[in-house]
Length: 471
Image 1 (tube, one colour):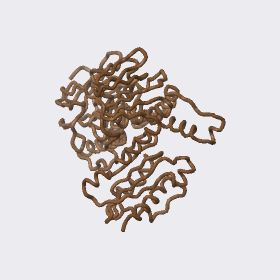
Image 2 (tube, rainbow, N blue to C red):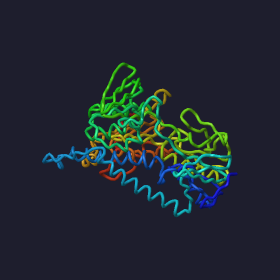
Image 3 (cartoon, rainbow, N blue to C red):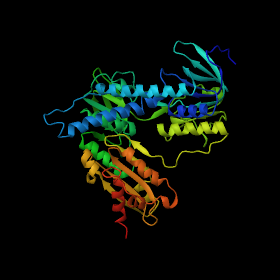
Image 4 (cartoon, rainbow, N blue to C red):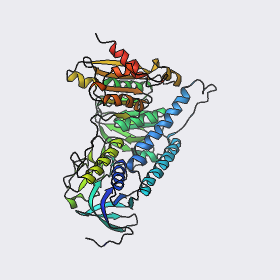
């Protein structure tokens, strides 16, 4: 073992690498069980990519833009042409304030639970030893009985794109955007690309959205995908499907995108949002006999244990579902597995999808296409937001809720929501959807009494609509 002279104990029961949701979930579960735990974080503050570059800042930006749109579309607030005009660089301040609050809160978790934080970049030097390199070039060495890799992911960077060019961004560096573009090209129409298309278009920026697939967010129920496509079209976002770049050329004042189809497009800047890569390349995994796939991801079993029995991995670094909410749960399950020798908890089978476009999209369960392919006799119940009193009061007329249920047993099979607050609304249906046996039927929404007026009332309206189709 290397000679160590750290300021804290050099031996721990468990060392967690990465302080994002997965690492935090594992570290908190382990420290509360009485284990001596350290968490390694290479950035100046805890929270990981979720807090600093991903979920938190992008959703904070989305919230601000959504409120600006709401204000500008209300005749009450815009009587004297008093529209709000803002820019991306201006609204970043709100995101930074939220990041600060999140960071301070999460730092408090480690302080209160006496979890040691090791500042620096970790890499394995042996089966039970890591090196932690500080920014000043010095290193310290620590050993542990077990390790949890929770290093997250970063935007995928193809070798032929110059991400050092001042007008070519990824979903991390876009948060450092200082100039105010009039025209943005977003390459990649997945969740991240679609969310940023909403943000920029909501600020009045011209947006071209390049989709490498044949339809937008093709994993969604087709009606949800079509609704978003229409909403983008209606608001001036140009979507180009089935396109792949040939070359991305940086110029003095922008970029030129060359597509394999022969098209050329020019814009002030480009946001490349086409995939992510696991942060494993600097961990020296060869030292412990671990290998990763082409996207830098590790294989794990049901307890999130890698092929090396004393090393676990959670979060984006293991791939699907690559959600902050799921990563936190994975961390808690790992803590249980280490504490008890095995984990009894597991992720739910149907994790809700939350997409924070403007409007939002959220779903749980099966799509119509999946049910049709499986020849399941289902029926559809729909509620349009424009028919709900609460939506009319709040000016949230755009959107709908769709419930898919078995026409014989009335079991709920899938719920799909498009519209403002969809990611919150979905959880009402999810709670019933997850019930077993007779607890999961569409009749619940008819037989219960909802507050009025509420957006939740959409479930009663949709249930009645669906039951009226039965004969």
